[in-house]
Length: 259
Image 1 (cartoon, rainbow, N blue to C red):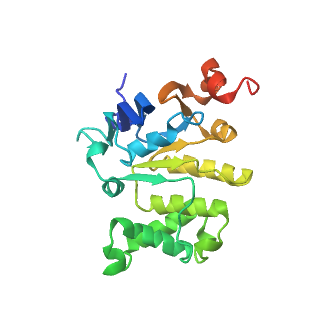
Image 2: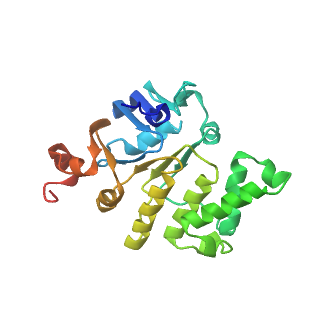
Image 3: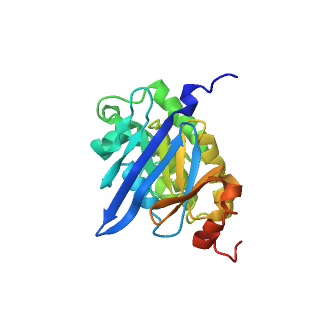
């Protein structure tokens, strides 16, 4: 039997026994959690489960009281998130999108993507223009997020879903290894949500994706592996079909009526 390639087995994110407390309340309580390279993972849970705190810890915004988070581990040992600044983690391949889209409304779609490349290399805007490779990356990203025909439109007039896709594109041109998305389909129409789900599946072929989401129909349609948090701990984890049948999940999150 052939061995599984080491690269496939490596963890892109490893949360090890992490506890985060706010005024005595444990938002995360000894949490162990990990995802592997090339994986699309969904995290769900009721309000107060610790989902946003998990994202905050993974990006260095919040420091844990105990435990540690290792990003992009492997033969090089990975990056200890607690020892890095947020902007440094971005440059090392950790991208995060918040629920509310944040784009430059006075710039065109193309110019937003151009500016995003400059986040990691300010000399692009100050000393030189884009290289052919960078221009190709922008056009490839435009096609991926479905905004090629809107590239010369000012971002401020885009529909809500289009702004969300643009912001995802702004992260993608920075070539992240791991993309963290906080409720990416909030406020979208059903067709926009379906299109976003297909986009996430496509992105997962390029980098690992961690999605925090409340829309259970969206999760059922597009998730393979789901982690359920409750009171700062992992309640269960597995295939979406198994998770939604778990009696503990029904009790604390989905509700018996839904079951």
